[in-house]
Each structure stands twice: as C-alpha cells, then as structure tokens.
Image 1 (cartoon, rainbow, N blue to C red):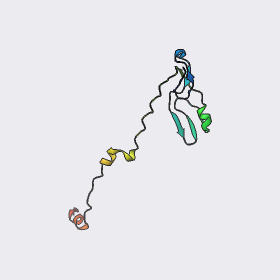
Image 2: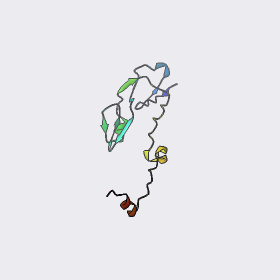
Image 3: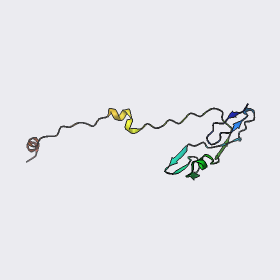
Image 4: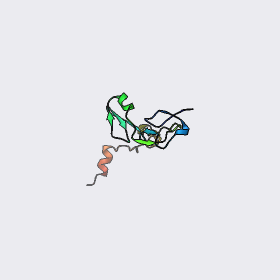
Length: 106
C-alpha cells in the first residue's frame, strides 16, 4: 500500500516499508509570496511563475512523512486584537480660555 508524502514540495507516493532516511527531497521552510516573486523561506530560488514555484526542487533530504503537517498559526491582525480594543486613549476635557488665563503664571 502506498501513502502520500505530506512534506512540502514532495507529494510523491511511497511505500512505508521502503521509506529510507534520504528518500524524500522537500522544503522544510514555508512558502513566501512577496510582490510578484514566489519561493521558499529555506532556499534562495525565486520565480514569478506559479507553475515554476511548484516545481522548485526541494533543498533538504529526509524520510517521507505520511502525516499531514499542521498549518503554522497565522499571526493575529493587530487591528482586531482584543488587547487593542480594551486599550482606549485617556480622554481629557479641553480647558476653557478663561481657565487657561487664570492658570497662566504672571
């Protein structure tokens, strides 16, 4: 029975009994999409074409992995952070011109 490898950039089918420590060529990093360039955080190769990005050869060798890797947690958007919603700027009431004249040193 062959299993699907879930290492990033591999996607091959493999036999668990013949899974050697150097049978999978994959990317341990995360995909990077910056402006028009696409690539992996673990290697320097970048491309503008998505098909070429999918075909970038892996930069690390290791055993195949049948378990799907959990997605990395996405950073919380700072604009919707609950800690920012709880923090409100202090409200100060503006002083009248008369009060400012009285408080001004003579």
